[in-house]
Image (cartoon, rainbow, N blue to C red):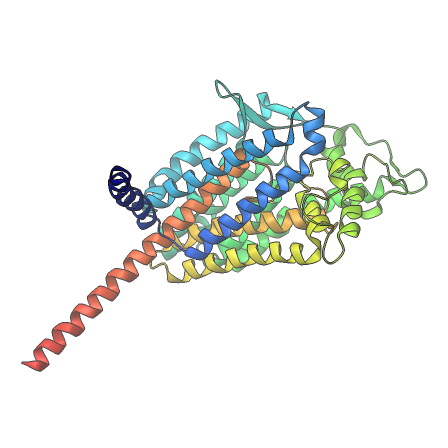
Length: 430
């Protein structure tokens, strides 16, 4: 009995000290940390619930996907912790390297990547046998590099040649290389980039002129889609050879499906959207309860692109509204970091990455409820793990790195003020 007490007395302080050390080294916005925990826990429940049909097709058990998601979450949390411990100024130094590396990677993906639906979005990593979506690396590198450029060119930011073109060029390169395989991601990145430019004091007339030029091919795509749709047969008319290359027919088809829909519930073009609508209708206000989704057996990619529809079905509109609130709260906390950060690079970095994640989340949810055409983007931190999940964690870790630095500087300022007050009081007492 005495030995047991002695062992406990020896081990308890060690365990508590180890846990205390880990907690003491964890810094940054506590609300963002809480949001990460909430979304990852929700991810475990939803991935376990929505992978039934996938497990059946792959002859695996639901538990195997649950453990896989748990492993991704643990790895992701470690990435967040590691990234937030690094001084964010170091990211400015590696931004140029990552940007220069991402462009060739995107080009290689287009030429020799893993193809899906006539588009190459992934490359297969040797040894670990894992696919990497290179656009995830590219958009992270782009916003890091944009933040660096915006912070360095504030004195000439209104100048077209010296301020605007050096910032616009990288956006055109990255979006141009992503667009052939993933137009929706390219549009989201471009939109986020222009928001960051506007906040970074780039000339509004330059931004509007560029947006006007960029909208021309999108408007032409919509015009072609509407003009080549046969309302009687609900089919696309024969396209000219120029419009039958790469993923252009897919883009046209998605616009037509979004505008006209389909009279057939089982139509291949509208199958996902229709199944998502059924899931939403079944969910109602309170949902059918955790793990009781029926549409998970019919909805393709219910564990990734259309996981928000499963959230609505199982947790109802209240659960869906809570998820929207969580992402908006995340964006709000990041805006607070932007306002408190004394240095331009850190402020732009936190804001750019947060807008990227928030806009991606809103786009995913809008697609699920039928407000946008199908885009194929995942719900950050909630969809089943992959390279996108890990890069999301890295982005959040970088945001927390900025937050940690802000807290340290504010803490130093408070100490200096207290010291000055104490010295003043000591002089008065004398």
